[in-house]
Image (cartoon, rainbow, N blue to C red; front, side, top):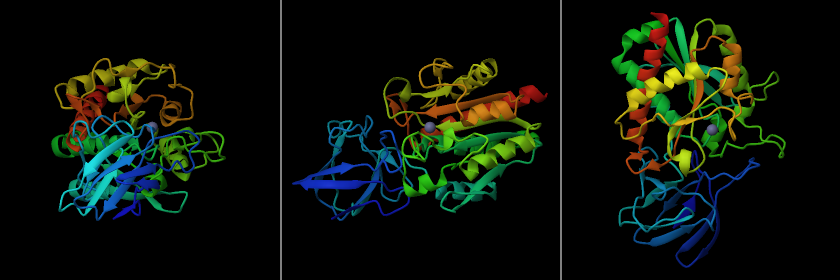
Length: 364
Ligand SMILES: [Zn+2]
């Protein structure tokens, strides 16, 4: 039997094995705060029942780990009594020679490339990552106006990328007329290295002391090339940019973290509220929705308007922007409002319809 993380997105350290229990830790790497992302593969454990134990650290949601055989299709373990927030027990079937386990449902660049092929996105070189990997932007439509969509400022936050995919699918399939007015410009993997290397990304530090991750880097002397490129793009296209939306996942679980919510800003609160109302209407009745109460108030707790994050720089560089906020989409949700690959795409489709409604309303 082999437990490893030798693949894109992999992140695990095996501490010790005692009988059928394997003690694990996730790797924090350049993080200066604790975080919860892990992803590992078990090969050759057919017929065994094993317990994977994170020694009390909170690394799992309500339904055990996300599971995959091919790293593309994901489901929750969802066996009552088999998991806690820090451990799970899994029985490998006779044919399960290779099983991936992850803290959340994954979304890797390969999937976005396939989407680009399928629905005809224009894929163009955008930036070079810290480790000199080529990063891309993806454009849908030809309109003179533009809405910018980003995700993975924090590498592990894969739910946000499903929202972008859903929004693009919806507009490509059902609203071509809108795309002649307004294009969607997406950079779905801002911390590209972190996504591929399986880093946390959230809480990353450059000096080992201060948090300086990709969503703390929108400053005059930005460290990351991708952040500089985003700012250049905003400056160059500010007359035409209608919206700037940054898709994230929140803390692991509990309370507001079990919902899809808008991180509100005080400077353009009314404008964002208009979008939120549309989004509530468009997502009503879906298996995962954004409700009226799913708003995090501005300048409360961790939500600071002035921080050097994507939405702050958007409001500064594109003062007439119709909406600019972070959408936090939960990792798990709750019964009746549950995260799956399918429910995330449906919520993203509602996000796409909301974009079209608000932009149309401003240009008619
Ligand atoms: Zn985030």
